[in-house]
Image (cartoon, rainbow, N blue to C red; front, side, top):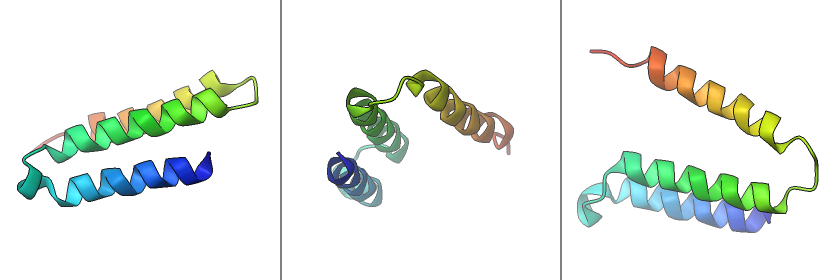
Length: 71
């Protein structure tokens, strides 16, 4: 599972770095990469507290997005 998540991350990072060559917005690439990584993690998770973990990370990401938004 870890190798698959790393491979998805590296592929997503390449998409971000090649934004101008492939004409795909880096925000879309980053969001898609994150969703795929979390989906892989959630489908292979053995614990019972996946929702708590996901909400914790979503809270951190949303605070970055909302409080760094500006001119």
